[in-house]
Amino acid sequence: MTTTSVTERQAPPPEVVAEGFNEERAQTYAAATRMAPDARRNEALQVGYALDRLVAAPLQRVVELGTGQGFGTARILERLAPDGVVHGVDASPFMLGHAKEDKRLKRHAGALDQLQLQADSADLAFSIAAFHHIPNKWITLEEVRRVLKPGAAFLIVDVAHDTPAQRTFDYIVRPYCTSGHDADFLDKAWASVLARRAGFTLEAVRVEDTDWHFASEPQMLEYVRDLFCLHLPLPEIRVLLDRWLAPYQAEGGRWVLPWSLGFYTLRKP
Image 1 (cartoon, helix red, strand yellow):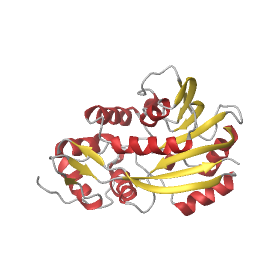
Image 2 (cartoon, one colour; image 1 turned 135 degrees about the horizontal axis):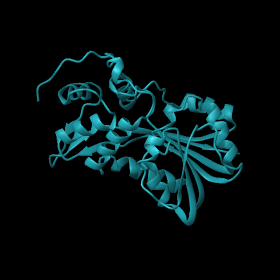
Image 3 (spheres, helix red, strand yellow; image 1 turned 120 degrees about the vertical axis):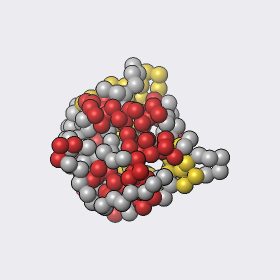
Image 4 (tube, rainbow, N blue to C red; image 1 turned 90 degrees about the vertical axis):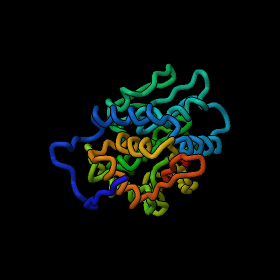
């Protein structure tokens, strides 16, 4: 494939920048997941393992922050009691509008730091690939602590600071995504400060490899373009991926995009 030179921090034209997760971003995200539904299988497996370590019995009431189109919600529903409820909260009604229907999922479009839930009512709080979007992180954590039962946990799964995945967001998604991506990512030190301020105990922190897998190189490039809503030709996306993630072709012909996620377990006393 022909390579193209790309300026590292080149910004998109002002006319393609939109505020937040708009309908275009929601549609391209949905298109990516339809095209390669198993690309993030490793993420789903690692989230499942993390939940199994925290959950001793079927859950009755869960609050999910940044539900989006339900990637993480599916993992929760697998561990939910038949009469249980997931309160899925997202600031973008466009993303929520694409979530799969389930009678146990109650959707709430609104601010993540103003949860419309009773105090001491949730068995678990959960968030995947969304916490970096939250502007008022410690205020949000205070609100999550309010709605959790004493002794319950908040599992945050997100890109970790100082990883290739974080640099991908900063140097690919931020300048070329239509909605921008001005966000900061957690590391152990910052998670510890936020947890202490909000009255949580930071119980565990780890980073797990969660590589993405694709049937072909073109599928990988189209998936990245659509998932992150990048206004770039595929050859330029390839150049950027080579620089920040170094994808490779594995045995059997599948393409692997190296990826990782941080797992942060906070406990309400």
